[in-house]
Image (cartoon, rainbow, N blue to C red):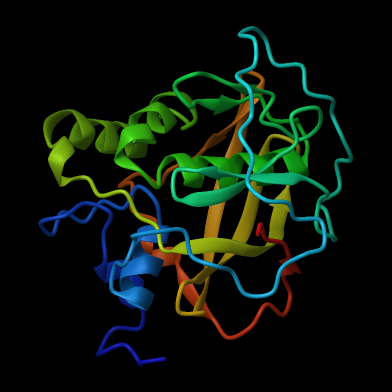
Length: 243
């Protein structure tokens, strides 16, 4: 891996918006640009994997209404969840409609209703990343699956005024996770991703429980890039990936 030039945090130099606008909606944009040069032509294969994976499938849209996912174990998982996987944007994301979620998937592709437990937060995080991997679904994710605040306002403003400048990103897949903290209403976790070149990175994410679902919490400036870091291995992470 090439060492960064005179900057201990090369990810902070990369953004999610083109034309040098440094507002990263998804820190994966930094991972992809740094590690692969921005190749986002197709979902990338992942390194390793788990035995509980399945080929991507298509979920039937769920009925609208209140979320009623069963609440599971409140301890962060230390083993890979048992779930199916399906393509969401450019990312293969987990699905467990009768458990962790999403319990509802609209015809437009909005994925909501995740269980109020650590596994539900994990599933919500990956599905959010899948939705924001394409420009088409990005607005849905920001409007419905993102916690209100300055970060969401900043990104929404750019989507409204400069939609052509927003780039969906791909070229990576989920390869593992680890929880940093879980309080019941706030989940902080690291997602390990692997690019099509086999390079691994760690993405720190924070979600908060609000109105019966998990919402992604963006930093005030909307920039997640500075928190992304390369990984030499999956040591300390639970291996977890789709096929």
